[in-house]
Length: 371
Image (cartoon, rainbow, N blue to C red; front, side, top):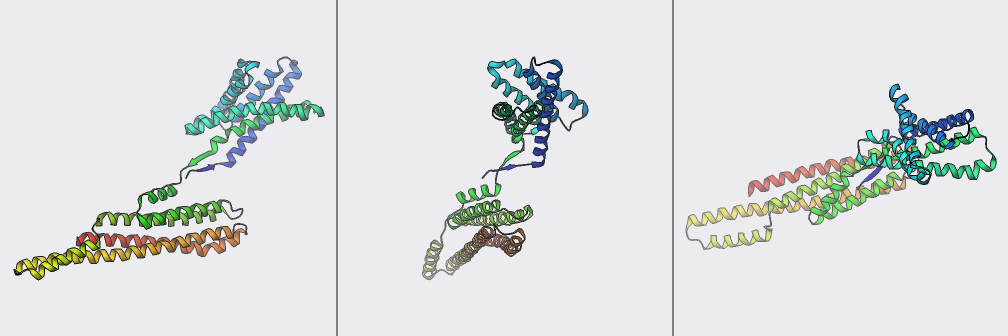
């Protein structure tokens, strides 16, 4: 089951602040330029200055030559594409502008999917940002006749905000759930009782982790401790099931009933044999079959004990789920106190499962030797 995670919140928040400041500073620079040079080409000026401001914000943290040269070039290049698109294709031009602004974050992302998400996000962010600016200007700034300095700064900050939201794809990771995948495969592959047990373990694990994610209190350390215990128990159940699968494969399809029938046949031959050597050979063969039957009987008992033990393990896991739900709204200290005995029991269960797996190996080797 894939899990979507948002990584490095601090980096995203810092980048957002820089882009908002860069957009606002660029807009204020455009206001100063309009005051000095006149209102002609005001649109080109404000977009160019905002582009430069956001370009510098995106290149922030690099060496000064890169910051002072590549930042403005990035911004001017993105705006050049916007202006080249013309008024009739402004949304397309804004998309190109945003996509170019996203390149410094997309290229080093290390993932084609992340790069595509960043470029698409910043392209959409630029389009939505300008649309939002015009809506704010028409519904809020215009009617109250806001001062130009406040109006320009707010509009530039809004564009920077939406472009920064577009960079969210850089922080999203889709990670596969290896434990749940292993449980799903084992449910398909294992026979009978073990498939049912593994399937229930997978379902209960999902419920525990979902309840854990919905908790409003508790530290990440506590959550990690619970997740670790649950994953180890689920892994042990799969391991035990896999080892019993190997035992069944090695034992083959010969059932105890078949062995008993063959023993009965050999007993009849022994009773009917007149030759001592033939009788001795039949007795030796019967002894080997009796050994096999005894080992299979012991293995069957061990299997039943293992299944019963795994049912008890599942009961522990289900109690853990109820405990997480029960204490979901309690304070973190109480949760940690109440959960600790449960986690200790889970640790013991994991150890028992490992010992059970080792016992299976012993039975398997013993059966192979006797065969």
